[in-house]
Structure formats: structure tokens, C-alpha cells
Length: 255
Image 1 (tube, rainbow, N blue to C red):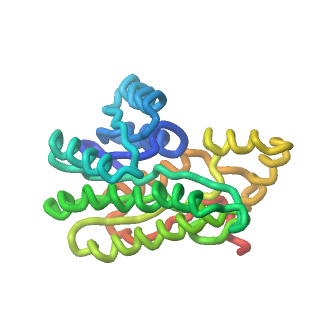
Image 2: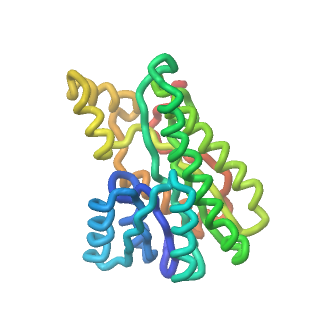
């Protein structure tokens, strides 16, 4: 089950955290993976680690906020393979603050990556998917795209938009062999989250409080989210489209 042999996959934001875990997981299941990221240091290292582990991986420098970059990424992959089987729109930014602490520039910065980046990259790959009548798209939303999170107005606004974007794509292309779903993780212990926790006056207290927001009392791991992405990308999920899959340890159970 969950065999991705001979599949071509592109994972954005794959230089670390959830994206890195997805890239490794897909490669272990047989996919040729494009590790796409703006980070030209960690990105190539992730691709190299996958190859050292026996997988197939290539680094692709990509700024999803740049529409031209998105178009070029699609052109590069189509020239080499004439197809992309799996698109994982994982790249994203965060911001802390209620509306009073959030500027229009803050909102625009998040929107340019979290929403417009997904829109632009998906639009670049859709024509070839339509031509082949095959394609799988998995977008990374958040528990903050299902339920409001305190002091995260810009982040939640964009992640709610991701859920809507995903459902629209799923509906528009359901009869054309293209599936689109999104994943809504709770708090996941990534390098980004760890770095933000260190900025708190009492990091240990902040960590415990964040872990406690999940009903099961801990944060998730990147690998647990990657397992969900593997399911949605696989043929075993052929009857699944337009869903927002919660992987959040019970964050929303009591809400």
C-alpha cells in the first residue's frame, strides 16, 4: 500500500520541518522528489540526504511568492519529465498578533506565500494535469484554517483561505482526474516552532502550554503529518478529494 514508485513529486518548503519529512517519506515510497525551497543551503542538503538513503531527489530553488518562479518550476519539470504526478504545496509563513498588532504588510507577506503562492504554482501545473487527466494536489493548511487561534489573525486568515482554495480546485477538476485535498496540522515540533519558542521569556513554560493545547498532551511530529500526506497522495485515497484532514492531536475536540 501507499506505493509511489515512478511518481514525480514536488514538495515546496522542503528544506526543513514538515516539507523535509514529506520529501523523505515520498522518496522512501519510490517517488522521484523535487525538494523545492528558497533556502539554497538546507534544500540541497535534504536532497543529498535522500539520495544517500537510496532515494531519488533533486533540489529546485523556488520562491512561491514569485509567479515567474512558479511558471519556471513547472517548465523545468515538464521539460524533463513531461508531467508532475504529485504537487505538495507546503511552503508557508507565520505571524503572531491580533488585528491591532498586525499591519497590512504583515498580512500581505503571509498571503503572498500561504495563498497566492499555492494559487500560482498550482495554476502552472494544472494544464499538463488536465492534458493527462491525472494529478494529485495536497495543500498545507492548519488547525488555524478550521478554528480560530488566539493572536494569529493573519495566519488564520490565510489558512482558512487555503481550505477554500483547496475545495474550489477539487470541485472544478473532480471530473478531470485531478484530486485536491489539504492537511490541517495542530502544533508540530518543527525547527521553526522550536525557534519561535526560544523567543518567549520562559521557553520551557511556553513549550508545555503549546503541547497542552492538543488533547493528547503533546505536539505532533513532522513524520506524522508526512504520513497523512502520503495517504492523500497515494492511489489508496482515490475516492478522497476536497477534504480538510485534521492531524491535530485533538486540538479541536472540545471546541
